[in-house]
Amino acid sequence: MPDIDEDQPEAPQWDGPSKSALKRQMLALQQLGEALVGLSEKQLGKIPVEDERLLAVVREARAMRSHGARRRHLQLIGKLMRDTDVEPIESALKAMDRQQQGAADAFHELEQLRDELLATGVDGIEAVTLRWPQADRQQLRQLILQHQRDSARNKPPAASRKLFRYLRELQELYGDSD
Image 1 (cartoon, rainbow, N blue to C red):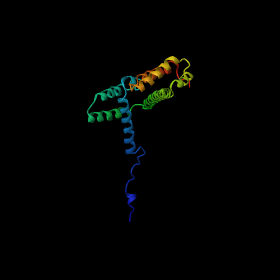
Image 2: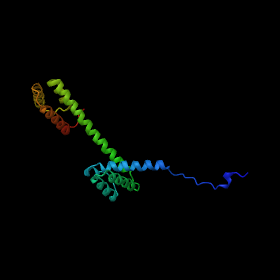
Image 3: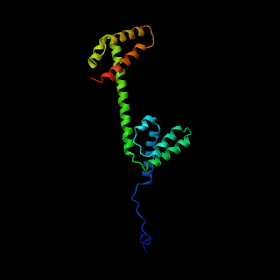
Image 4: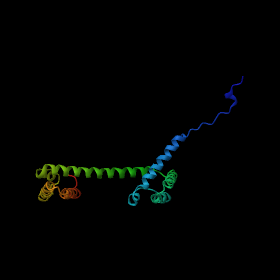
């Protein structure tokens, strides 16, 4: 009885990526394209995209409101990105995210400093002057006392907002001395 394997020609071996792996790559490129579509024009200008057609398609996708049309456009963006080196684009997006996260962290740190300052009252001015020796102690004192008066009268926290703006101004002018 002849062996069946001997009669059949050997099937060629495919050494490339699987169909699932290709699909994952395409979806990743579409997601990268979606991140580009979500950027403002100023932010998009900071991203190193060499292909002018890709930039035009990204700009077109912003104006689309139809879900189906937008999805097809994202697929086109993914297709165009196959021929583009995505490494610089990804690194620029990551750098932009780190910068935004740093700004958000600084914002929250200032909010926390303001809240601690308002909680401790006039005694908390020392913490601010240690951080920024150039700070105007009198202005800080007036804002804290104004906040206490506003709180006692159930008024909106205008002094609290002014204090936050002053702290942010100090940080922008003199940086973090921590």
